[in-house]
Image (cartoon, rainbow, N blue to C red; front, side, top):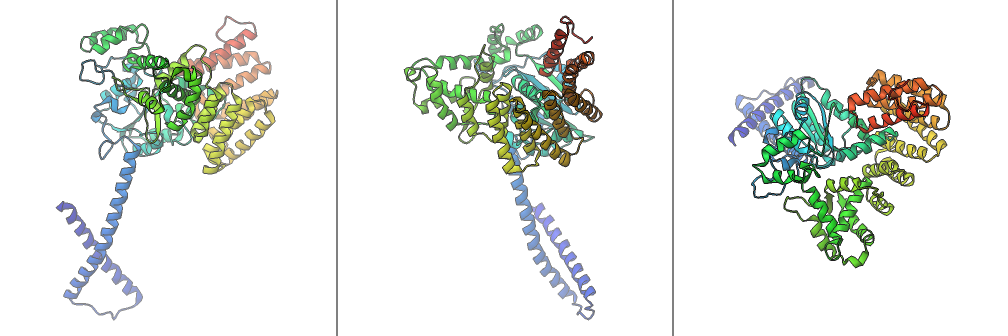
Length: 610
């Protein structure tokens, strides 16, 4: 490597000369006019001596700088997807499985994934990727969200830098790296994994990433519909989980149906002759989605059900059931093996206990984590002594008719190992299910942990405290909730400003508890001020503004202003149908609110206000 050494020598010489200049300047300023002027040989010797001295300093500094740079690169490689020395270009991502696409059984083919079947919304998705923005594909697990996003990204943005966090802990590094790139894709497959007070993915971070002019940056994310619904309901109930604030930054939301349309099935049949896996999936298209079947989700579900049989693999089935229920309870992080081992016996007991003749624990783990023909497995190692669970099994369990809530013992065992982020999600899940006692326990745990680690004024701490206050509100402890709301509001106004969206959210919560206490006029006054402030800052169509408008409509109705309330509900519904689509959870809530109001006042057949 001769060129770098030559460059270093030039740098040393320049610094040595600079050192002599500084020395002369210092002597001149000190008044040492009679300092002897050395002969040229002496000057040369001085230069050599100084060069040697400064060379050692420079080498040390360069070594330190290079060491720091290497350490930073090593840390970045641990935090984001970086198979080489730099984040790759999109065009270099030739294996879709490397970025989260489920593999399919080989069936005599060399490819681990079948040919891509174009979806009806592909043109819309590709058009969305041509501009800076936040593009979200939402749908059921194994609906084909990740494969569709991957194919569109490869087609439209091959020259962009691909940046993906290696896990929830890598989000902050991924966003920071994206901020250094002119054209890039921030890939957030399974967005629910990155939404939490500790992840670093905030609405502010997303907004700043996308706001810089002269850049083409795209946040491309997928989100399971069940998680989107949970986040939406929590936000509608005034919980402060940061997920909704991040989702508010989405510029294009594209719903992905699990079942293929007639046109999509036609396109699949055209490709089936070259891939027996597509032909097999088409044979089950009346019951399963094509991507769903190709991911081996239904096959793994059947294996899990069969494993409960006596003498088969009931111990493994119990581990999988415990993992699925921990996910259903809101534990989003990798699941500790010790937690699932602790819960295993309770799930075995629920299916017959020792009569099932469960296998030893080591054999149970072996079966539960063994890759099947497709490469998928019900559980798989997730680093350290933890595992992850195939999210298809979680969604399928949740879709079962009259599925019972997760046992309280499972929730409490999960809480015992949960960090602040997971404790908050567990609390929000329990709150949504009407389990206020569990929600209070979870939120107190999250709030206490953040209070100790981040301090009382940190935004994440205040968000967790707000969640706890909302739970007190829901439990009917209204004076306690009002006192908490007022304290949080004062802190947010002091640290963030009166017009900040979080401060206005606290005002919104205060208005809600006033309304609950029958102080409807005070609530309406508050809501009108909040709607005006949010409309001026965020716009009348912003999701946060619409939440306050919805609450205002409810309070107006209680004041007897029925026509104004109906008009407000109708306008919120119109905007949500236009912006979010007819089946989005917020749209469904608005439709229900308007219908209930019209029924109450004798207009059951109307769909708009009087």
